[in-house]
Image 1 (cartoon, rainbow over the protein chains, first blue to last red):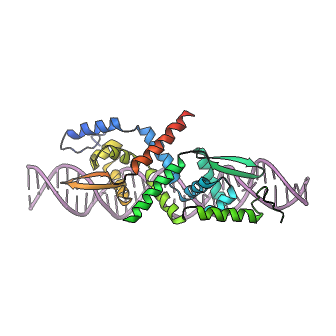
Image 2 (tube, rainbow over the protein chains, first blue to last red; image 1 turned 30 degrees about the horizontal axis):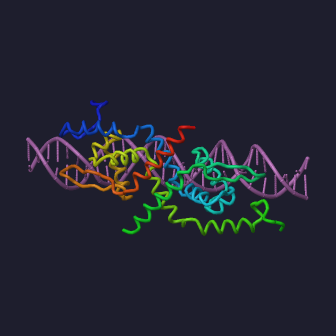
Image 3 (tube, chains in turn purple, green, red, brown; image 1 turned 180 degrees about the vertical axis):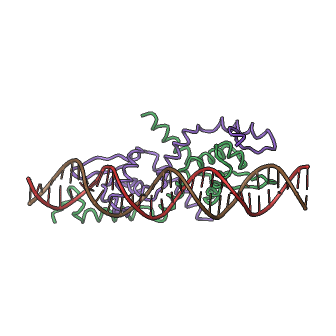
Length: 124
Length: 124
DNA sequence: TCCATATATGAATATATGCTCATGCATAAA
DNA sequence: TTTATGCATGAGCATATATTCATATATGGA
């Protein structure tokens, strides 16, 4: 490796380097984009998105969630932990039962925008 | 047995089965939710979200994208294929160069809503 | 107290995924 | 035609991730 620190760029012109620098300045910071990816990753699993969409309708306990999304209690519980850590859901205990509900007001908007994309894509 | 509809217990079936059935009816169909998860999965990778955010600013060729997101040309090319298949980006060729740009008007909205979540979460 | 229920969780496993490396392909220049 | 450039792609690898299984914890009832 001779040019270790160098980034490979189109060699033809110097216009590119300038362009790249300007875009890098305008672009959202790297750490934020990494966080953003982590955030969207949570929506990128069918079990989790089913849970979120169900909770969008109403507060539910774990076993009902499991029945609704068609996964085992254990699987749902594992996913709920991820959703809890991401602060997307909150819970309250009532006896042995734990009721989960949404804890983020952006979920509906994100889901809806995603659904809009899916539906429009179907038209083509 | 003796379920007055008071506290819902998971094995005293009637109340719950009814609840579950109603929610299942209201819920977006399974296949759609699976598609939706597939869609969000695309935003759940830092390389891809960087590419999308860069293209949100302007049309770019592959090697410039690679320099901007800090990944190899090959890695970017692989990710661009995924973005193409998802119909999130389009491209045009100009000589040896391939310029990519966004092909979906929902991207900005989705990214912005995600960023809003990240930023509000920081306040706590 | 003893047992059943509701949920949580650690370990193990199978699969998915993103990257690198090597190479192929197309276009442009020499 | 030969060489160089920009991009695409398949194979292989290392890591991440979602599920299952077994078990732990907590609460309520007999």
